[in-house]
Length: 306
Ligand code: CP
Ligand code: NVA
Image (spheres, rainbow, N blue to C red):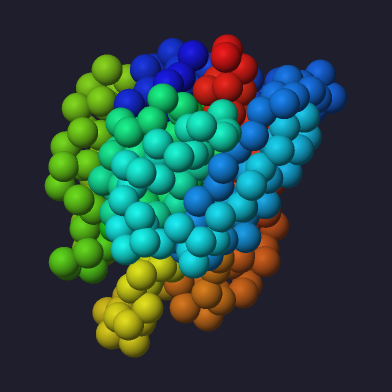
């Protein structure tokens, strides 16, 4: 069904909704899918740290009867020890698929072009598509109707925000984004989402005012203010983003039953307060669990046919 999984924008509407539907089936009947990837091996390249992504891909492969091999940031050293091209040309001789978490998005595109095996984007500076698929699966699970759903994203216009925009476009949802000036999402990604959204009825709004963004929201989503690779900007960003904290008072400006969402890891007391992330409105651990189910579907779509 899929050749690679690099961005949600690349998916057809059929593929997007099919991934969500089969995720439901896998979550409800995991044993039915045991052994579907028997004999298959996934190489997992990590240039950045991870808890959720590593665990869900590795556990997912094991539960599907396959295996996963972890390559740490010091193993490959893309661009210094070895080119992306050579890395791909080697890996395709040994494994059936590659999952990669890296900095430059171009690395993932180049890798997919270099080798004949499927490549999965497990986060770049630009996108985090596996996360957003799991998030929209979580929303569908909780609310059913994604077309009448308003997601408010408050914080940095980063990789997670970008993939949520693409997912909202495919799902036909409403999405509002509040960022400080200078931290808005990439204009190209925004344009793409607005274009894709024409087909589904999705609508988007962008503001610098968190209160405006969360008005009438069904879910409020935030992420770290300093992503991996931006550690040296942490202090400066902490000051700029302080008015964008998701706390009780911001939650009170949305719908009464508004959900709280976060891809994790969370920086408690910074982008979100304990009383919000630990509240009954918080979906954060459901989101984390659902990474497993959704990524199993992605791996089956890429590897099941071969
Ligand atoms: N949400 C997410 O991708 O978490 P990790 O960085 O721990 O993989
Ligand atoms: N925006 C964050 C997401 C972590 C899962 C980062 O890139 O570090």
